[in-house]
Image (cartoon, rainbow, N blue to C red):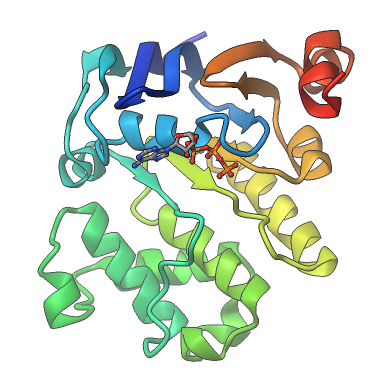
Length: 247
Ligand SMILES: Nc1ncnc2c1ncn2[C@@H]1O[C@H](COP(=O)(O)OP(=O)(O)OP(=O)(O)O)[C@@H](O)[C@H]1O
């Protein structure tokens, strides 16, 4: 199995707080990996330390066998690593299509696009493919701010997949999304994995969503990895049950 991302002994301490305290796991090419754990266990901090938003206190991160530890997000983006955040990153005054073009430009590393707005530069076709893929054709010309919250989350996820990245990290894609849109989101994420071969890691509190979407799940507790396994193995793991039920 080819490893896209290798996380080796990552630590991130804030003064005396050991938010992430020696986390190691791999992400295989073409898989959907879930990252779960109780509130405050260090999931977002780990994402931030892996993706250059925070300098890790210790540890190494490898992308396709190359050391990317501490590399800034803009450079990582050019290497084909993108992410979403818990809070939506869509531009409400721009259309769905323009948001996708802008995201494609940012993946290419042209942060000036934020200043000058979307310029097609060959990304229009990619945006149209993504719109069709995410079944948003009827919304392509709508301002993102006018979409429902669930539709905006779908757009946010689609933006992360613009420009065919090697690896996408989705931070709570299902958060606040209603049941109908949740089904659509899961179905599209599955399709982007199986049809386009996209590799991604999903942080999510919605257990049903994670367990039905992901091939493997990493469980964190108190800054460390508690368990790694298939959804069935994770559900049956007594340590995981303890961490969640607190007894
Ligand atoms: N910048 C910071 N300074 C100090 N402590 C921090 C900082 N960022 C996070 N922490 C602490 O690190 C711990 C892990 O937080 P983190 O946000 O990574 O958890 P999480 O698993 O993503 O939580 P949630 O599921 O609620 O989003 C928490 O105790 C948090 O208070």
